[in-house]
Length: 162
Image 1: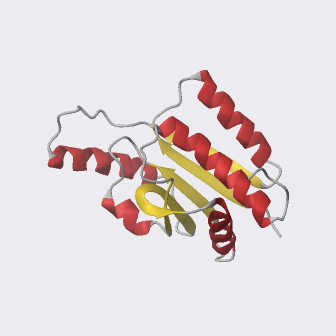
Image 2: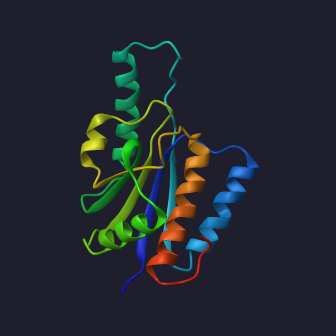
């Protein structure tokens, strides 16, 4: 079986060293199982007082940047507060199911602070929520990689802390 290629596309840049160190640790752990790439796309300037139309324009411009990184055979998993919450075991099964769908690669998208454009939501194979709380996007990246690692270990029957 060939190695799974996982692409993480995230709006915004990680700046703080503690986030980058945490990501690096999970990238190292995941490297035993998958080929992982992380792409950051610049977030659009978005003043706090935007009209709905202005917000949609921001989402559209960010979606265009994300779209340039997507391929026709991608299995898209969108991190979305309105998506489905999974336990680690449920996520592991969902991940296994996605692998069985013969995508060229799995692409995990983390939108910007204003969310993602509705067109990207429609394209997502899975919309995954980490629950009703709002996480900083930097932390969501770390949680994503940790849950990917945990899910793979569960799927393979390998030990992992519960």
